[in-house]
Length: 257
Image (cartoon, rainbow, N blue to C red; front, top):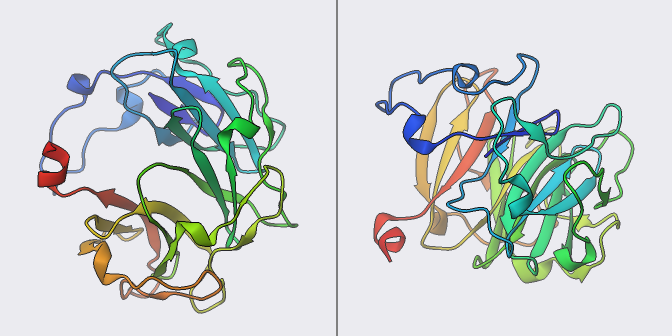
């Protein structure tokens, strides 16, 4: 299930995605989905069945959050369907699968984060707008959301190559709609917050830069630090290069289990 910044959802069978080597360019997603050229893919979720006991939780750039039962997406249409009704100027930035009783953490560009239980968000239809998830300061915006499941630490990464881990328990459980707490101290040195993941010591991290560089490292090498710090350098970037995104990789032996 692919979600776009315009609030639409599209489907694709995994076997329809062409396999390619690590160094290949891949195939444009626009050739695989019947989406508008102006739409950008901002999230994807893999599912085997559209069950009644799972939910899709979405977060928008302006701090709105929405939860819809997974079975509401079972009617596959080539042209996609509406996943969330967006306010003018807003964009969908994240969509995750949840069990209905998970804690959620929403993070912002200026380094703030709020944690609350998804039971604070009632189940809504696909065409609903949602409710306030986090209260944003002027010029701030949501960059991501995680559904807390089995991880013990929250990893945050900034655009200039800095990152850190903090214990999940450092983020006190509150109610949706609050301002949250500092998750990383942003500055000219480390840049804005661009990504966040829930991780364990056994995980590995892949960092991708806007210049096309990729590095892989063990999460255990990243020190656990307090929330109100700048973090440590994860990658040395060339002039003009920035971190584009990060991915959590589970070692193969853990995946087999």
